[in-house]
Image 1 (cartoon, rainbow, N blue to C red):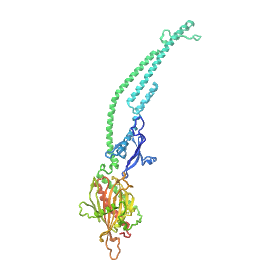
Image 2: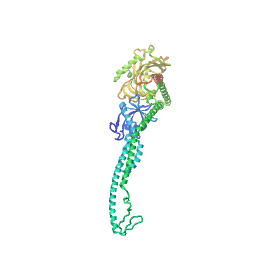
Image 3: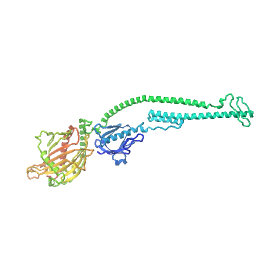
Length: 597
């Protein structure tokens, strides 16, 4: 799997004051379902949301799914160093990166976006500027304080604001004090001048005295004294200097009280912080218990995820594994029976090359390997198993016998299988032809999902790539093999000729292994000989007079771990069914047609 990621920002750590975290986009493998397994998807991390697309080129068609990371739980896998899971409530995404380094990069980026998504994140805290007046400061204090606490500002920030307002108030007090002092000086000077004017007017003009002792204006409009001569200090109206002193003392008391409150709050913050730490610890323990309970629940609710597929760390035991495989095979059998009953086979004209074509070794680059495989099968596969105690007879149904030899390597089951069978009415040439011919492969092979011929080497040799239907919880398998058909002429005139098809794994640049399937290795041979019984009288040889002896050998490396008991049970069940299905197909195809020796 290849995984590439790109971000819209630098690779350096993001400064909390510089803005939101950078975006991230790249290819991750996402677990889709137990049928298709892991699939490469284009994943984008942006604005606290994780979205995925089928590919980078299909982003314009919209995402196929997304998760909000505010309450997401990111869990690195315990055994797989490239995998991590993201769960939000009941929704779980199983993701795999290219390597552990890319997994760490994705996890850190997701955690950063998650941290920036909630209330109280560091980048959301912004210090308010100082106010320019007591009035604006007072109004701002009531509104800003409420909103700040809602946003989760810490107490120290609020104390800093209070200190700022105290400084503003001090400056305002100083300004007012200067103003009051100036007012007092002006009033004193004005009082002195007015006293002089009143004295001069008393000498020149008569005055009218009111009962309350104040003065009236004369008819000519000259000023008369309105203050009581008994209260010379009351002529000022207000004792501005005294009021200023009083105001200063009052505000000084307020400021002193405010400072004292600030000191008390700072002392109390330590006590509050300890309480908060205790509550956070309690919350952490509750969250751990919740996660543990959810994990146990997920083992049941997400049955069918990647943790339940085959592997030494699978959460499913052997009995459950076997039951799941058997149930899946039963479903496939029912589907196949229904398809067979509804399908009307279209007769295909499959011209058969002359026998001489199948007798040649060939000149392609795999010719020597093909010849080696053919000779090995002719030497060892046709040997009688009666004297070999390692071969165990596991199935005997009529003419069919299936033998197995138990072999394990690094915990992987590599049991060779050998089956013998006798089928009336068909020849070895016909059986091997239909087994080798790719044009009719899908007519009788029910385990294949799709296949294609990668390269035609000669008239009797091709390279084939095929994927098999997945049987959950086992992973899906694919096979790349060379298939060759040969006719081996008998060295003794009394012995029948031998027809053989050998299929063995090879490598090819046009069919490289992928993460989607597990690449299996095979070495399979279908070996057939035709026995003819003399007809009665002068009758021609008919299909009633021919019998095909079949020897089928299979050496399969499944390419991955699965319970040994399950693999052996499946092989015991499926190989007889395969031989019966295939030989019945050949009998059906050849019925009423000329015999092909």
